[in-house]
Image (spheres, rainbow, N blue to C red):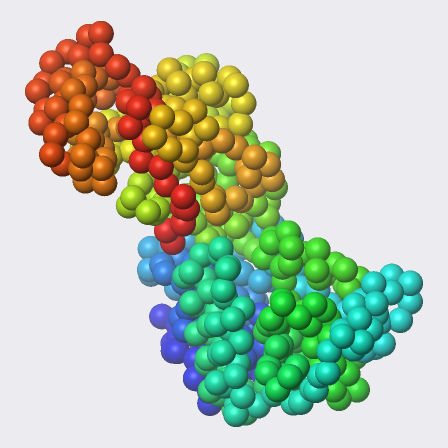
Length: 518
């Protein structure tokens, strides 16, 4: 068993002894990141066989992974030790944030044959010449100079070095910055905790930063730390967007204040966020520091990978992001035919103002098993299981008329068709492949009594007599009397009654915002 232990501030000299020599320009090898993000990822370290190893929980919950081993010696032996450590926890080996050179070396090893190695563009670091960010010279960076000149003309400002003494002002600005944000509150809370740890341990972590003021109020701050003798990494940068060009201004002032020995600036990754990617590309990086990942070829995650690769127009980064951030065993159901994975249905949960509902985010069938009704069969089975679990309604998304017709035959209705008592609009955050944002939301009642009881709870004045016929969930068939906030149910065939989609259109629970449950 490898002697992993939680990372502490006292590990900084040990970590940097390895990271400065073997970590390259990788932002994940900054000790400040290792320490501050340990509150979320549970980072642990150990030193063995001439290597420093980092173990973490990839999603911040359960899935165990390891960063690139830093050191020199028998690398193949270390990989075997990590594989054994993962197996002790019943996990496949997952390696994270690998450099190009390490990934190439791994592919040549005997142990590498058991690993699927891939690049994730979403986690490539943006590397810039420090001189370029200080001077912003040249035609390409003219827009940045224009923004800064506009800021200088518009505001009376001052700049000062950031320190732990700015903690209260930093968090006042963070509260202002969070106003109106639609991102997952959990992710914002995690980042706030990371910043709290950074500010509380500012000097011990060797952080340097800057603060920008207008009218005596902090409107932007930033800080970072070195990852090598010549590369400085910017970990955090926040600004009040009411002050136009505050971001380029704080960036230029801070980089200009750094010692000249730092000839390279790492502004970290974009996480696949379009706005962040465009912002980082607008500074014209010299290099995208590629990061590679490796997964055991025999793992369930690789089965999921193949389903998503075959069923959707998703590249490695999209699939990797799903597997890393969202995939859990209980969210994916696989049907085997003759011992071979044939079809899969992906079911997650969304929360909204009327409660929590299951969400069918994907159904996919391997090419050799198509046209056998396996996908439809899995949807029908899922609906029956949801009924037994007491779920009221399920959501999914579609993007073409063929699927719309298929969904309708299964009792789903499009949110856009709901108009009798309200319109359902969905602010949908779970977008992990290109084009998914254009899909239309569809809903299906899965337990009619539970659904009507929930509806009556929100609309207690409702009086209705309903006969429902459900071809898939037969237990829904019957007569429903809604009165005084309660629902009475009498089982019958429901012949001639309305369908689940017609009931949903008649009595919709119109939600405004859905938030993905991690």
